[in-house]
Image 1 (cartoon, helix red, strand yellow):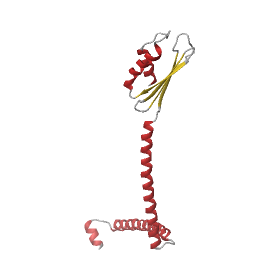
Image 2 (cartoon, one colour):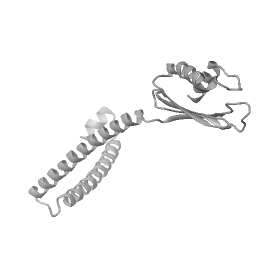
Image 3 (cartoon, rainbow, N blue to C red):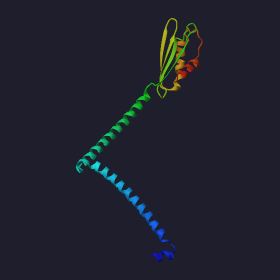
Image 4 (cartoon, one colour):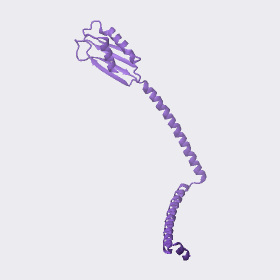
Length: 181
């Protein structure tokens, strides 16, 4: 055999050294695999400890029922959330208030306009006009933002013209209402 290695030009000592290294690597791999197998056996024993096949089947069946129940609850929660979003869209969640002096002889900005709108800018405007003698409240419904000019004209015709010592215009009232939105 040594004649074969000498004819090829390989030293017998190098071959022996390579075989020793190969044996050491194989021993390390065997120990590593043995440790992995030992850990897997421990996990298997702890999983199977005290349980027979029927009780494991019952446990799996119970867990699957719980998962189905949680899925149904999740669907119900999604539906409730969608309903809440729909309802929230109809609530009056935008508001604005502007205080002003309706008449020159009354100070302190006692008059005000209050707008309350939903997400589509529909709602109402409450306009309180305070004078020395009286306080007038006007409630106007806003169906669309385009209704503001009509509302401003109505407010101008109702309260601002007869006996109002302060000069005002429909444009002033329109700007007041638009500032609320």
